[in-house]
Length: 311
Image (cartoon, rainbow, N blue to C red; front, side, top):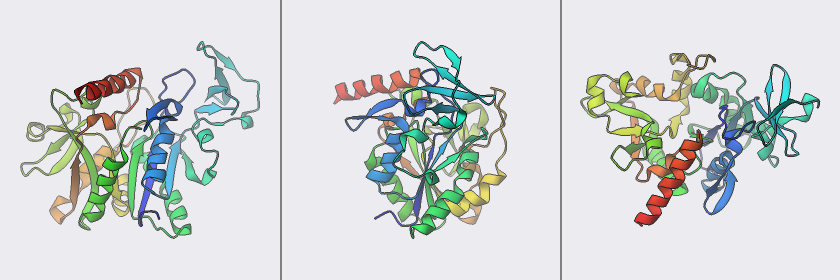
């Protein structure tokens, strides 16, 4: 039976790619002894291992496939194929022949599972799109969603036991707890691909009040920034609906739309009114490696070998 009151969101609307013309989300990695597309591994973790339902998957309308092994992307109303050598060519097929590469992995599920993030308005914008899916499916299945687990589709190595710890901590927390999140301690052994996550800033009482790059935190917060936040979250739904629309917009360096991001929600928590954040330390930082590029891919597998040898 699904966890009562819990729903999930898998964010996979990014345009990142490890191979030309292919969403990085569909690339396979080894998880629990099996090779799976990254986004499918994350979805299965929620659905099969933790029995979380409903789940909303955010995809994009950029990467497409014809379902017959041909991959490409959509640009200016046209479909471009990308060959194995990286050569791009305009497709002569009707655009209706194509579906999203991510959506094509879930042929056993209805389209109600998906929401397409057409414009790149950031992670907070993606989460905001999911409310109708979670509310609609939750009510139809008799599980009205009050708490939302948010995972990234390119972070496939989180263990079921670790995510279960997060869920239980959130469930057992007080009603005033509006978010629960992992943290990873920074030390010499922390992999470089994990060190790049946002620093957790704290006030003089040790309360989490900000997440950001070192230059974004003031001196008091920086002095306590001994941990990073890997962006694995559980939120109270009412808190998300109250605060996301108020978040500031950030300019992007790639000339795309300005965006709103989830880490900014930390700064909206009303500690003065009793609201709290629950922090769960994660012992194994390799679980939260996100595969953004081949450097991250190599970072993970080299790190795993070090862990195996140490054992």
